[in-house]
Image 1 (cartoon, rainbow, N blue to C red):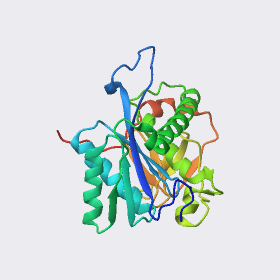
Image 2 (cartoon, rainbow, N blue to C red):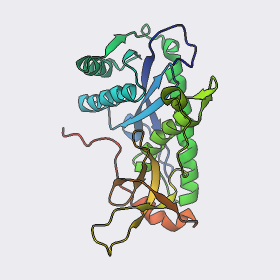
Image 3 (cartoon, helix red, strand yellow):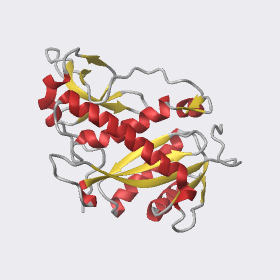
Length: 268
């Protein structure tokens, strides 16, 4: 169902654009792209759904991973026919086009004229919206955890992913959220603040092992709605979390030792 009036069309336009976000940590400015987070922002014109895909760089392996996420984004929204639209990410566009064709889905290409960035304005606005949401979440996490969260910290990337997740489920446009437009139902899942220390349920290997592990909440799965949490050992999915009711700063060591990249480690 088309919720947003961006011109009469029978199929949605899937627009995407690469963004770069830096952060001055301990008075050390981020001057180069290596000091910034590269994140692909993907937007659907029919539902206004947004996805964020952090990437290590713009290499060919990274673009293959991004193309998989673009195709997955279309599938989650139930689109069998789409129009792919971008400014400069032509390699990614071609990879996504070929992947969808192999799956048997109709896919069109329509790009704005060279240097006509306003023609791809909706996704550029989405880049700004997701960046501002992520900055708010990171600012809160820094203050409440009492640690520095630079570009290379896992929480920096996860803030963008969770911002897009929240936007698609809670931002109302034309009377509906993107989640309602795609699924026909309001999102009623449980949620805790980003980066809050929580006890995550784990299935113990032995009956005497602990069933709850201290973790940081990162986001929720788009397919199963399970909680995504981070620990010093890495990322895990869990069906249930419990809030501690304690000051976040008590778990600052856990936050500092958090591990878990949001993109594959490519073999160069």
